[in-house]
Amino acid sequence: MTGHDEKQDWDRGRRGGRRSIVLRAAGLTLAGALVLGVAATGWVYWHLNNNIKSVDINSALGDDRPARAVATPTPDGSASPSATASAPPTGALNILVLGSDSRSGAENRELGGGSSSGARSDTAMVVHLDAGRTTATVVSIPRDTLVTRPPCPLSSGRSTAVAYGAMFNSAYAVGGPVCAVKTVESITGVRMDHYIEIDFSGFAKLVNALGGVTVTTDEDIDDDDSHLHLAAGTHHLDGKQALALARTRHGIGDGSDLGRIGLQQKLVKALLEQIASIDLLTDPTQLYGVADAVTGSLTTDTGLDSLGELTDLGESLKGLAADRVETVMMPVVTAPSDPNRVVAREPAASELWESLR
Image (spheres, rainbow, N blue to C red):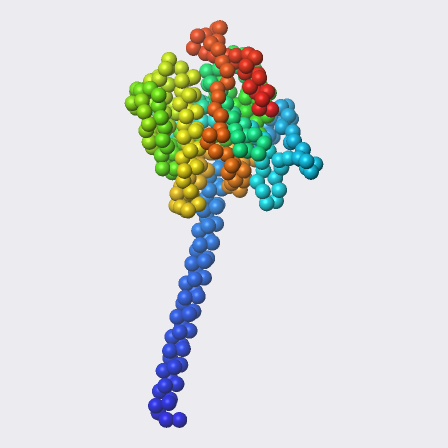
């Protein structure tokens, strides 16, 4: 072999060695990226899952509750609509949704003011999903409704006393989510399958994560208490403004809670329309922001306290459009004992609740 041949062999070996090093480096880089990607995905799931707070309402209330809805059999004889291994559940469902005015935490105090020593359920809605989950009814319960508040179990093992002529939102104040659910079931005769609570800062973060929300008001709003000043018309609101709209009542109508409920119901429809108008799956950053805002602000029952369970619920609502959601208020009249309070108007209220069983 000549010296020239030896040099060519040496050059080929050196180039092959370089390629080997480059390939190994690329392989290690790819492997590292995959490991980091899996780790990041795992951290995101862990973070979102651990954001959610929950209360074991079923264990606290036991069997002394309205019966669960009975599934309607399908032509093939199976109980419908039930979940399968590949499909989300589609049965009728009743969910108690509360907006809590908790002042705990700096963000909530900044948005709501006041003491951090307690919280009230200033927004209460029973969300009824019809079988198939393509239509829904949202029933608002005025916080100023006078009710018979049943005895509620406490974490200490004791229970609250029955209270006659109590304001509806006092149930949450004295016994938390468990008492709120028990009181709603007591006055409606409807089983609450799930419980969802969202606080001040969580609602504002959710609206911001969605890019704001567009709402049309029928009259000027001038409320120093909620710091909201809007002329009649259409407005695109950020989270802080949307929260103020949900809380305002002194600047509209007669200043009662009933006027506020009308604005809250508009917000529900507007949020559904905003969610439908964007494709979160094509924007991972926005999807994460929405998921973080939702899970970080929620308290649920133990049946919805995981990312998987919340995802299943969301998947089951894919066919629910904003125009298929009916918003109503529980029929009420002025309370005979107090012109600033209301009571259920019968038989209309009972007929409404019967339609949701």
